[in-house]
Image: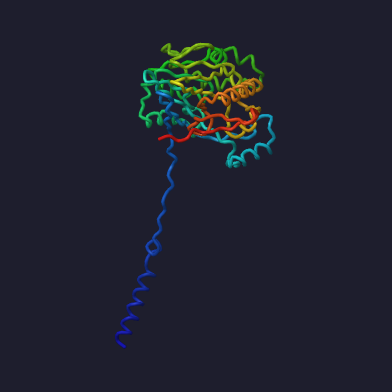
Length: 326
């Protein structure tokens, strides 16, 4: 009986002690935080040349920016691609670093701080890939929109101090001509001037040291062939590069969406200076690249933005991302 009473007393004491414990001690819970995405660079081998795709950032575009396509059709295409429709149409900003063995060439440079907090990671990712900004000796710009040019400098200082920047003469003449704004319709002048201000701030350090140069169609720069792909902007250019039997084309902004504009390539986007010509250029280049099978590097397709263009009927196209290579 004494033993039983002792057991009851001990049980009561144990329960009393448990009930007196603070809630945090009574049931201990742990919260494991989610980690941020870290994919920032991808190295692709083309013959004897190493190409490093550099992610600047990812954002979402309003479906309303795509012209000549019903909203219901946009929704249908996004569903087919299992895209997050609530956020809009996904677009990346990529730049490409080409190590030829004797030269380090950067094709486009990202947005830096021009387009908000989602961008500005090119230099960070370039360093993570094992390179230094001062090693870059050449920068090729497909065009002068801020998400391609702003990354070359920061607060008036050249981000690539030993590099010479190249852009098409027609492109420079359009954006850097002080009389150009007056030629535009009144409702477009304010937006144009805001864009020009960002461009001027980006190129100024290179102009000051005479490291800002222009090229023409037919020129060859460090082994890169200039391909005229005007329409998105007046001097928009793509660049072809060969290593052995392999070829890659840096296509710039002939396309902004791997879903909408591959499924419906005749769809223009609000950023096109000449929408009709931009569509004609995309159709011509898609057909050429699908037929010839060159590797493609695109700044606005999902990172790493390297892959191939496929078509079964020369009317609709499909983006085939590069297979991962270790």
